[in-house]
Image (cartoon, rainbow, N blue to C red; front, side, top):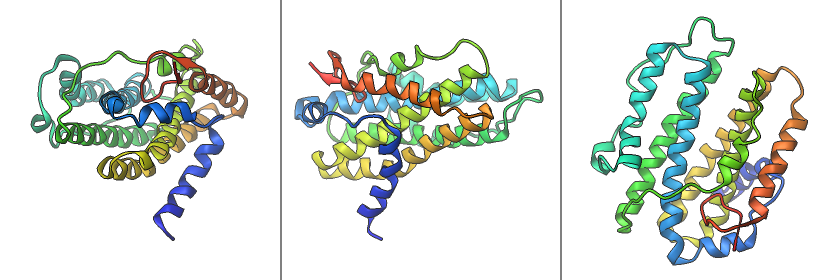
Length: 256
């Protein structure tokens, strides 16, 4: 089986899950050389935020106090770099692995599966953060903190205020963000230089699994049919992708 065929098999369920494709207008803007800087910096920050989101979920819902502190320590070098401009590519090398066991709190109603899937996701997102930073350094693109777009905020504004529905919504939203990232990597890869194209294609497998992990966890925790809620949040996600957006970012809508 060719790699291209494998990637098409990976993308098929993602394209069926998402309620719209990325518009051509976004691809046209994203492939412009002058937008490479914002694409890479925003991708870098998206990897950090994806890891943070997973970390907050297990800190809030699943782990004991010692593990919650260990998770914060794990993220500190990355947050210092991204938000306080402390550290460098050299100081971040090898930091994507956590050195302590992450333990479930005794009264957690959520399974060890939540911890296992989210810790693996965090390791991969932090490794991807480092890989994006490597590419930026090679291309002479200096890091600067840029304001977030509307995408994640727009999705999270839909989260219900009571449990376990709030957790289920956050997991469904996580699935949509990962699926959209995967779809955009695949759409962008043919238009980027060889190094970035190879990198984006290499991300497809892990991003595809992340979306599936989030969705599986949502269904496990709900213990009921959540297909209607998945559709509702998917409609919001599609509106954010298909409507005009003045703030061009990796997950932004139609540039205007």
